[in-house]
Picture 1 (tube, rainbow, N blue to C red):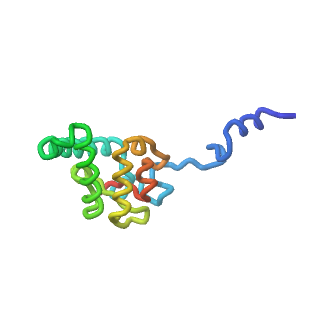
Picture 2 (picture 1 turned 180 degrees about the horizontal axis):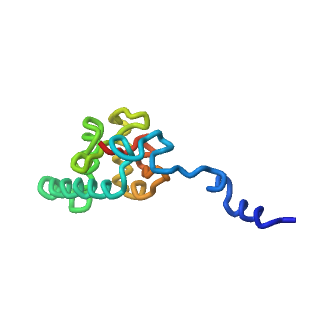
Picture 3 (picture 1 turned 60 degrees about the vertical axis):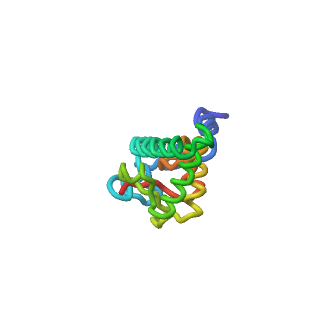
Length: 150
């Protein structure tokens, strides 16, 4: 006879939360500390950082790249800014302002390839809005990076 437990486990699907331990804090599964330097960045700081970056790239785009138009200019500048600064300095201007940096999962610098993948997907917006339990956006997962506090 089929019981309530059988239906509940079936409805949960494979790998449901009853079978898989839930991490205690974002970044625990990645070996990151719960707070302080090296911990996974929280949504508030991320939002403030991207707003700072967007304000700066919009200013640059509207003053220097007017022929590209109002819609494409800021995205092009954001792509270039994020790719170059994250590859070389490990953070964008907005990240630096709010105390964040981009690292690989083992704590190293992201390099040009990972920075380019991450930046391109960030410009699409949707990957940055979809997070996992460790608060890593799809753009970070695809690039093998994590945004952490400094």
